[in-house]
Image: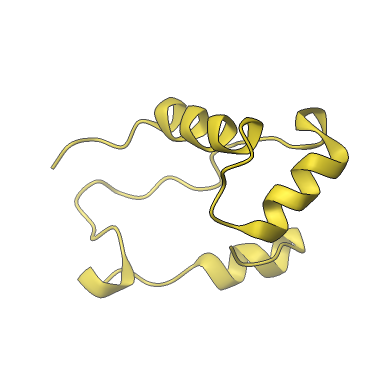
Length: 75
């Protein structure tokens, strides 16, 4: 399995937002209203590379916990 490159993911998301083409309309609207300076992209948690990466593969779904902790909305 190819390692996840966070810099590439960050670039992809910011590119889509900068060009008005992100798939999450609410995020795109907020980006348009507040601009790039209002957002940050950061690693929240490291997962053991020997563990499954997604719930379908058997990993626990921690997205709800992170959304609650960060007062964030699901995309």
